[in-house]
Length: 224
Image (cartoon, rainbow, N blue to C red):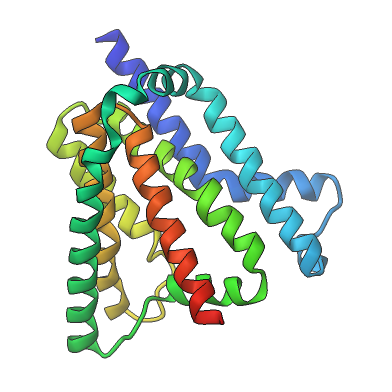
């Protein structure tokens, strides 16, 4: 019981840190009399990269024992056997996105528009965050933290997936755009399931990284 309570407190603390990190960082900058709104493009890139990697470093430090343990045992997971789950969630995402577009005529989510706009302005910056930082940070927060909070498999998978989807549609341009929670939640469900099945955080991290890498490659091809 004590371990379950400790795991829950650690999980909820990391989740709150993630949600409040931007606000905390701005307070620190305000104390230092630094105003991010005055930054030029290069300064904004440095600021965002620093913020993401500092946050990632703190969360990795908190979960260092889990990370070291899972890294040592990653070879035993047979990662190749989990790649089929990427095809499953990719297909389900495409189907659900097409259906949303058919019924609402909303071609894409505001989150995707922001990503594409950022990529067109700063492709290297976006690539670093998308391939290196986001998969590790998001899996530690949305998978490992939720796994610590919810010991029941079905609750873990549902809440982890839905929260992941919600965070990717947190600034919708319309009420109907909230429907994109569905396609964004699908990989969240799958990543959570692979963590439940493998008991190793590097399996969903690997799938997440693979997916983001392929999406970035597509963006480069489209840009050309």
